[in-house]
Amino acid sequence: GGNQASGMTIRSSGSTSGTVAFADGTTGNQAYRGEIGFNHSTEFLFLNTAGSYRMIIDATGQVGINCTDPNSQFMVGGSASGGGEIAIASTSTNILNTHHIGQLLFKGKDDGGTAYGIGAKIQATATQDWDEGAKEGTKLQFLVTGNNQATNTLAMVIDSDGTVYPTGNLIVSGALYVDSINRKTSGSGITFGTDLSVTGSVQTTQVKRKGASGQLTIGEASYGTTVETNELLVKSNSD
Image (tube, rainbow, N blue to C red; front, side, top):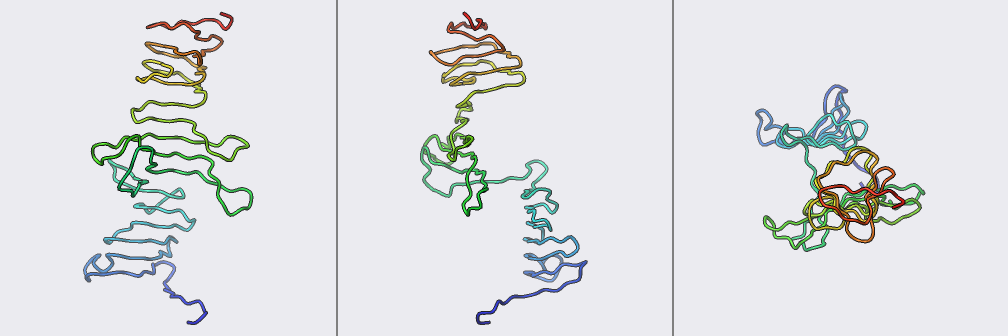
């Protein structure tokens, strides 16, 4: 009491568990419908509900949700058909166009300070005013931080219609299979604002270039200013 620290100790043998149980009966798991405990044999702290393990923290600090054998810092178990699920939700009841629904941040600190820097993040952003169950348009934005910088910049967007917009160069080291490659169009395909560089092969039914800037580069050849339909016109760099 007073200014002294106080606490409660539950002492158990090294092969058993010490628990605080919440019961609504004396038969079966009625005696431990809710339970907080520590398993001395396996060295993990656990939290039970409805008579079953729901969360554990093992001896190395790894956390398991709906699993008792996590092998990473945070692991979520689930059913055979659905698997584990992690949700990042907005609790707002008025989600409007451009509102962020949730963000996944990648943080770190290296200068001995108390604040964490944000190296990269993925954010889900509404593309329309939401009406739950009817209008839930959302895009994913990927932000990174360049070398010698401390501010996130947009690197790629997956729009609500599935169109992918990289803001820098798109480099493909293997084969690229698409139905069409269109620069700055509203239809399907890959939209790119700068050069598309491919070191492998491109198989496509249609390649188009529109506008005064941006080019499709394959090896040492460049797709020039002429627009052709249903074929790939390749010009040398000197043409």
